[in-house]
Each structure stands twice: as structure tokens, then as C-alpha cells.
Image 1: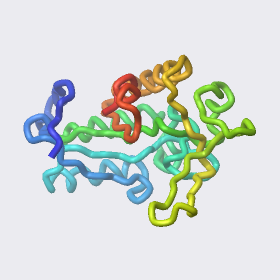
Image 2: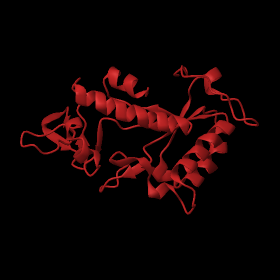
Image 3: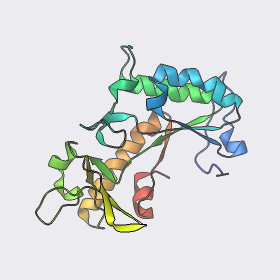
Image 4: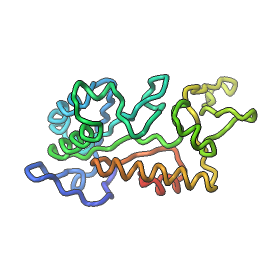
Length: 208
């Protein structure tokens, strides 16, 4: 069990205490594509809390690129239309309502923040090309993985553009961008989780 080491969180008046501080994190993974829109997320909270979970981890919910993959983010500041439902509320209002409902059920909300790549059609690739890795010919490099059982088998995620952390000025700009993004979602009530990055990048962005 992971102990909660973040800042103290005072529950909304009338809500249950946030149990993560006292009991540690017991994380429920809410995969948004399986559950539906944010109204459906909220409908699941009583059931999840009753099972003793103290944290709701939500996979990326941002606007995706051409592939539609949750992990190919085109715009970090916009909500995936699939999760809006038919409400007229703006994106931030919907997300803040969800995190508030989590707190009312004694849980915290954690978002999955993807900071090692974007969608290839994310406008950042054109505005800040220096943030990204490039092939020898100059094109954007997509992340890939070698099959440990067969080194000749390589999977390339062609819908993604790899962000490159080189310890230079471009890295500082990238970290500053994601740090502002984290601050925005923290204001909405989320905590951020980002994996597979140099520790300096996670700390600089404010993610864990």
C-alpha cells in the first residue's frame, strides 16, 4: 500500500473525511472508455467507496488525436468529447464536479498525465519542435519497444510523437509547460501521476 504524502486535503463541508490520509492509497482504476461520460463516472462512486477504495485513478481524459487513443493527446486543456455527455457545462466545471464528488465519498481523484509523448497531430509538435525527438531525416520520432523475446520484433506507435528530455533549455521549457498543466488540474481537485520519466521531470512538473 502506498502512503499518501501529499498536502493535507480538507473535505468539503458535509462530506466524509478523505480516508487516503489516514488509511493510505487504495487505488481504483476507472477506465473512462469503459464507464462512459463523467455523469457515469460519478454514478460509480458510491459502489467504489463501499469497497474501501480511497483513490480514483482515471486514465487520460483529454482530447485525443487522429487515432482516438486516450494516450495520444492532442490537447491537454480540453476534455475528450466522449466523456462530456449532453451537458452544456464547460470542461473544467465537469471535471471539478467529479473531483468534488470523489471527496464527498471520502476519496481523492488522480489523473494519468502523459508527459513522455503526445499525439503526432498535437499543435505542440509544430509550435515547439525542439521539445520532441526526431529521426535522422528530420521527421518526428515515434516511441517504440523491442520484444524482449525477439529483438527483431519492434512495435512502433505511429500515432505518437516522442518528447525528448535532454537536460537542455528545451527540457526546461517542456517541464514549465507541464508544471502549469499540473497546477491547472490540481486547482480542479486532481492529483497527477506520471510514469517512466527522469525523476527531475516528474518533480519539476509537480507529478508523482
